[in-house]
Image (cartoon, rainbow, N blue to C red):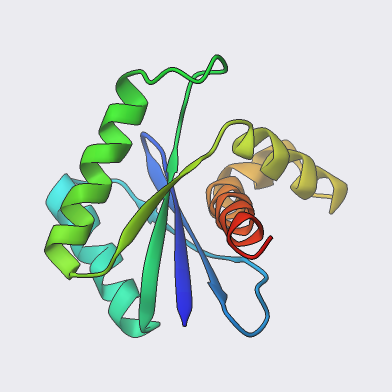
Length: 137
C-alpha cells in the first residue's frame, strides 16, 4: 500500500510518498494553493496517479497540544479530502515538522532561498515518516 503525506500551508501544500515495502517517506511535490476545490482536485489526481491507500494530513497543534484555527482548517480539509476521494485520511501531529524539514535541507547544503521551494514537501515527508514510525512501532 502507498501513503501520501500532506503539509498544509497558506501558500503551498507539500506532498510526500511512502509505501509498505520501504516504509521511508520521501518528498514528492508541492501544490500551489489556489482554491480549496482546485487543491482537492490536484491532490485527488495525485492519489489516483500513485494509487494511494491512505492519506496523512499534518495536524498543526499548538505547542501545548491545543488546537487553533490552523488545526481546525486541517481537520476540515482532511474530512473534505476523504469525502471527495473515498481514500481514508488520518491526521498526525505535525509540531516542529517544518523546523525539522528546514534543518534537514540546510544539512544537505540548500540555501535559504532554495529552502522555500522544497521545505513544504520535506515537511510532508517528516509528517508521513512520523506517522509510519508510530504505526509500525
